[in-house]
Image (cartoon, rainbow, N blue to C red; front, side):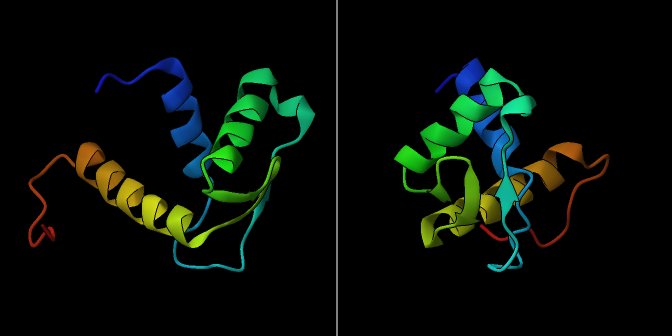
Length: 86
């Protein structure tokens, strides 16, 4: 599956959430740009966030962000990560 610009924008929005806490939300302001606003709306439509402009992660959204965090740690690592869960 190729990484489309829209998917990258959605992942960027999700990367602003802290996966460890269900109490921390975000707000995507219209000044953030049309692409970010549209990405947040798509995430809402997919059931990953609670509001069209951010809000909180849903349970599915938390799971996605946990996987995204792991992916970003692996991709940003300069060395092989030990004990990466399969």
